[in-house]
Image (tube, rainbow, N blue to C red; front, side, top):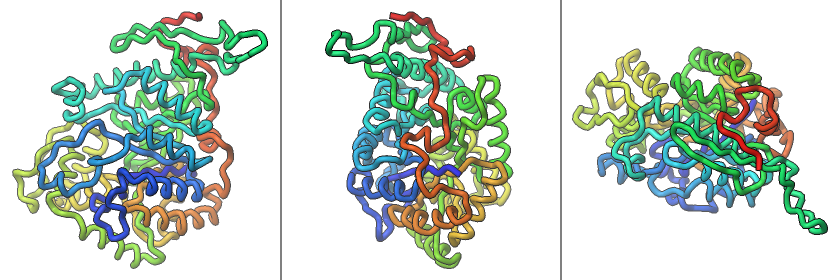
Length: 452
């Protein structure tokens, strides 16, 4: 199976920064990130992943002032470039929004990271859904959901074509002849589309991987279509085996229309693990974390997960009210609301569940119990692996690497050594041909092309 390590600075549990062993300044503590990255590499993880927002989320100041998540963090590409110098095998994946970036910027930055790291870069292709992000970029409202994904599709087409601006062997750097590159080895994009106009070419050679690995997390209908066309790794959020199995079959089944092999998309559901040497020890660790959640913070995190719906007018012990569908993650919204209705939960109860791992799957138990669950999902074709979300750091990552990884290896479910040096090689993904050489129509640039 494939494994990602998804790092929030102090962990995914909303109160993780209050844990006795946490680095309270983790978001700007480079030494802390070095330790995490090297631990993940020692555990043979395929990749580390850093999410990102382009704003400080709006919340009641009583809650915001008690939260450490997305408040004081490094910019992820800068951080991953630094971490590439203290690691050698683990993949380096970061978020860059298609809503408030330009395609040329994203293409150039991730190509640079791929060169700096020796072929270990991955781009988490996302759209932005928070109004606060829009207001940082000259807009009062963010783009509507379907518009966001329509823009994202055009954005991704441009980025992937820009990565192919230069043939792999274009740069001769021949001092004797004086020829730096072959004149027929570069391609001018000349894109004119609905949302973007980009001439190209990219001013950096083709990345070592051909293209950095493209990661996606959108599981709405529009998001699935973008994933089927571009994504090579999916971070999904199903909470049940049945839901994961349905998502797995749906996403893989959409790839044929784009001439893609289903094995060239790795689907990794989010999984937050609380590991103890015994089940009782794991439960004790979980209860300690839950006890650190301030109720106001829990309610605000729930509001964020539900697309910014203000719950402050309701008592914490009020049943979950009817909430209109948001412009945020539709899949997470549906998961949370269905759980609340099915179990007749109060706002407080839903908030405690959601706040700990922000709507993702949480499993606690012994190494054997956690490996059992992971093996069931993997062998049952519900996933290709997992995106591990340690609830607190560094302790929960240390526990997973020290206790769960050996159990997975004992069962023959996980590598004991890296298969290659690039992220693609370790994920079992092919190095793509340039879009200027690919025969399938869907893989050619959907743009005007001129060769200079």
